[in-house]
Every structure is written in structure tokens, then in C-alpha cells.
Image 1 (cartoon, rainbow, N blue to C red):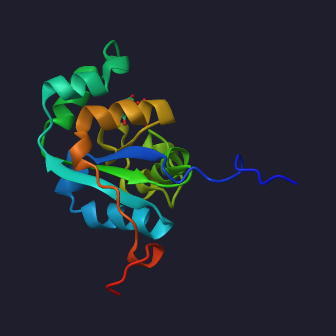
Image 2: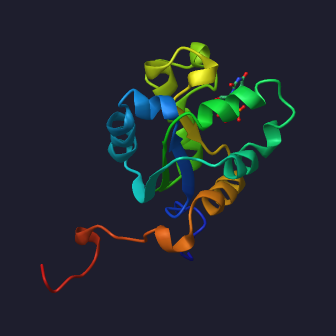
Image 3: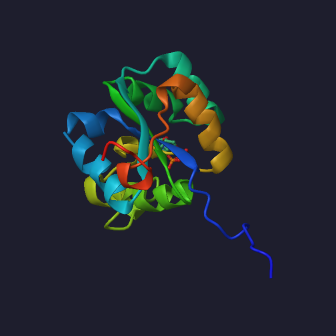
Length: 161
Ligand code: UDP
């Protein structure tokens, strides 16, 4: 029989995770990063920044007509964000599960929002909602040179070890 490759996991899938200003202000950065590392995903990009109106209006372009859009932009510019790219098999969908329902009141305990927040307007974290969406968001927030392709030392042949 021939060797089938179609069932192999796509380990290169990537998603954009952002810790929102309330997450930074409440000192939740370490705990949130820990969850993604512990799950087994690989961090390939990370930066802390004050988001501009321009980038946010692009990031949330599908929400422009929503009544909460103005307060969402004020919230997202109220302090620095920690923006990250995580990589691994099924990372987009798994991250959405780990982050939990948009409305923390409906988020399961054990999810980031279910454990750390109570209101939809302060829900701590963003996670891309599709593989295509993730690609666009990663391009919006990161330059290609700032995403690092790296392997664990035990997965490479290294004469120095
Ligand atoms: N949001 C809000 N009020 C709402 C719905 C959404 O303030 O009634 C905010 C909230 O911060 C949410 C963001 O808008 O995370 C984007 O909404 P979306 O529906 O894309 O949810 P997400 O993908 O973040 O779960």
C-alpha cells in the first residue's frame, strides 16, 4: 500500500492571540502564555504594543456597524496589548476552545474567559476565529521577519550537543 500523507497533522498552522489591555493590567500575561505552552503549542512571535486606531479598525472591520464598536476601540486602546503568534496542529480551533465563549458569562470554567472574566466588554483575550482569518490578522499585526521559525534542540541534528 502507498504511504498516505493526507492524515498527517498540519503542524504549521498558526493563530493570532492577543492579551487585551485588561489582561495586561491584571497581570495575567504569564498565566495566559503558560496555558498555550502547556497545551503544546509553539510561540513563534510576541510583542507588546499600544494598538493604533488604524490597525484596530482593520482588525475589527467586520464589527464597524455594531453598537459596541466605539467602546470596543476605546477598550482596546486603553493600554498595551501583548500580541502573539502560536503554531501547531489545529491551533486555531483549539485556541478558540481554550479562550472560551465571547461572553464570559457563558464561557466554560477552565477557559481563559471562563476563569478570568465576567463581562463581554472586558474579556481579556483575542483569538483568531478561522485559519483564513488568522492569516490576515497575523499579516496585519506582524512583519514576516518578526515571526521566528525554530525547532527544539532535540528535534534537530546538532553536532554541538
Ligand atoms: N464585544 C463587546 N460586546 C459584544 C460583543 C463583542 O464588547 O456584545 C467585544 C468583545 O471584546 C469581543 C470583541 O468585541 O471579544 C469581538 O467580538 P467577536 O464577536 O469577534 O468575538 P470574539 O471573536 O472576540 O470571541
